[in-house]
Length: 412
Image (cartoon, rainbow, N blue to C red):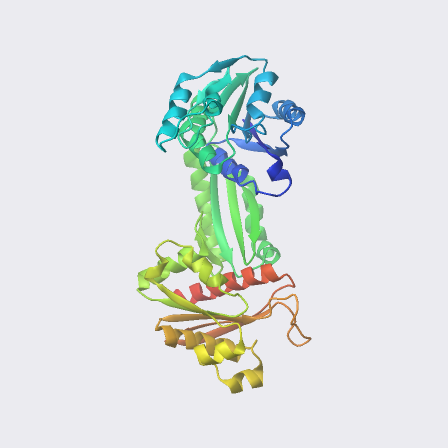
C-alpha cells in the first residue's frame, strides 16, 4: 500500500513554520506497514489543492491531508473537499456536542462560526478531535481513502493515534516492516561506509535495505526489511550483532535513543555527576544534556567562560597558560575541564574551547579548530578537532563530539 501526504498552508511555503507533521506521520505510517510515496506542500488555494488531490490519487492508495480546517476565512480545505467530491453539507451532532463542550470547559459560549466546525461534507465520516474544534474527515472514493486533519501538531497527532491509524490497520491488510536503527558517533559517513562495505553487501541477499542518516557529529544506520515478522526480525537482529563486532567503538545506542540520554543513563548507573565549561559552544552542550528529563540528578551546572578573564577568574585557568599556548589549546581545555570539576564538585568536567567562526581564525588555528577535554579523578583526556567554516554546525559538532568523548570515558 502506498500513502501520500499533502500539507496545506501558505505559512509552510513562505517558511513561517516548519512542516514537522509530515515527518511524524511518515514514521507512524511506516510502523504499520504503509510506505509514504510522496509529500507535497500546497498553498491555501482551491485550484492548487484540487490539482494536488488529482495527482496524489493517481499515485497512492491513501492520501492524508493536513491544514486549512480552522474557522476563519483563510481555511479553505473543508469547502474545497466538499466541492471536489461533489457533496452537500450535513451537521454532525457528535462533533457539535464536542465543539460545544470544548468551549464550555473554558466558560465560553459557542458562536455561530464555531458551530460551523461541526458542518462536514455529507459523504465523509467525521473523526472526533479531542484536542480542538475541527474534526477530521475520512472519505472513501473510488477505492481510495482520503483523510483530512487539522494542521495543529497536537491535534493531528491525537487524531492519527485515536482514529486514523486504527482505521487504516482495520481496513487494509498491511505487511510487517522491520526497522532497526544503530547510532554511531566519532566516525564520518564516508569512512564508515568503507569500513562496513562487505557487511553492507551481505544485506542484499536478505532483502535488507541500509540507509545512512548523517547529522552533525553522528551517523545513524537504519536497516529496513519487509516480510514475515519472526523471520525478518531474526535476520535483522543477526546483522545488527555482526555490526556490533565490526565497529563496537563507534556505536553508542539504538533506535530513538539520543547521546544525552545515553550519557545520563551511564552517569545514573555509576552514581556520578557532571559539569561543563564552555567557550565556543556557548552553553549548547549543557542544553543537550539538560534536554533529558531528570538530568538534575547528575548534571550540576555549567560555566560559560567566553572571555579569557572568566576562564581565569571562574575556572582557575592560568594566565601564563593562555599567554603561552593561546585560549584555543589543549592546555587551556584541560585546565577548564579540571577547573569546572573542582569548582562545582563533580566527578566529571567537560570543557570546550575553539573558534566557531566565521571570523577569528588564523593560519595556525583556522576556523573550526576546537579542543575538547574531559577531566575526572583518573586524570584528563583531550582531543583536537578540525571542523568546517559553518558556525552553527561547528557548535553542534563540537558539543556532540564532546559528549562522545565523555561516553567513552564513562564506559572505560
